[in-house]
Image 1 (cartoon, helix red, strand yellow):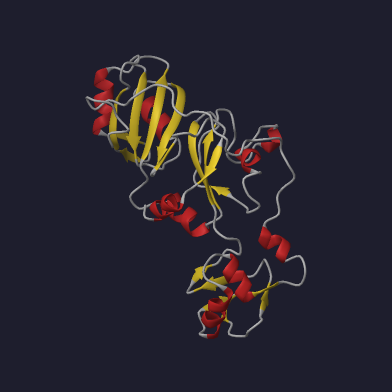
Image 2: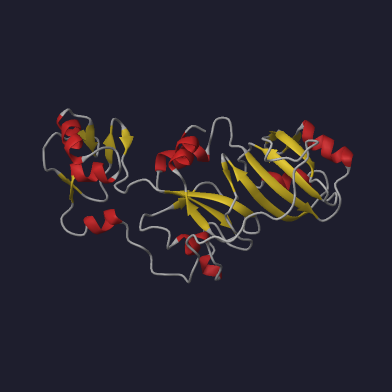
Length: 278
């Protein structure tokens, strides 16, 4: 872990984090936003060069050059015709990679407790999409999942290529959790978890685990790169512990600094580059 992740002595630092922010705030559930691309398709389609330019790949003029050179396919067929129009349901690929007609956008949310990530609207539960509705007109999707009662960082994007890669990374993604247990964690059990615990779906390795500095022994900091479902909960349950509060404070290179609970922000260009390199 970096120096900012831990206090002296190799222990996780505790305390409150994040201050007031003037970033976009969650509001009441609005009507489902229409993306710029959706609006463009309302007539009789959109020119292929504009479709590619909207995706942020290149300018319209350069798109014409790539189209003429045979770099673009529509529904599996090479299209070289200038002025060719496509619909929202067409499968457009540039150099073999699917093209999103909306410019890629990236946001991170500090998810509150009790908010659903997917589904459960039929139960009257509020979802993260209610919070993110005002972020952009683009159709965003969360990358991965957080349990309803789990708080912390959640990434959103309309970049399907990045979302797919981060959803099942070859080497995992660095994540740091602050864990509050219902009872103190015995040192022997902490050491067992540090060595790696075998669950029903295989061994779970943690990069680090320790008591949070100057806090009760039921407050734990844990770093793992595992993206398995409910892995942190299952890890502690295997040793006889129940989690009272779970907060993901680091995801990849993203942190909760200056991001209050329930707020979101747009990723910087450098953060987008860093996420793409994970």
